[in-house]
Image (spheres, one colour):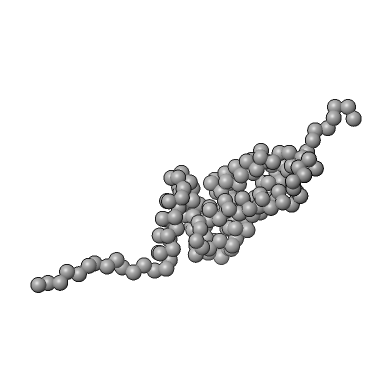
Length: 155
């Protein structure tokens, strides 16, 4: 009698394993629209990194900050944070410049070998930078001292 042998999957490299784990995680966590943004941003980063390597340039942030999903992420977050904290004397431009700086640093430090995709990392950096801005304003339990009040009609 012939012994039945099971076919084994070819062993995956660590890169393939990490890519597969990332893919499984985002499918389980996010809706299809967000997954598409994540994968488009990752593909654009990959293409830009290849082009930068060919031109012997190291600055990807300029080009990637103009990429539509990234720009929408930054502007959308700045708009939401501005609306939520209008009474804290923080403007749209305050949030926008801080978020651009945070995303710039994320793009410069990003590698494919991380556990998160670039879009996810940028989103988390924006969230943390927004909280840092609020902490820097000195908001505390005594809210009355930090809320912007309109000027009286008659001064």
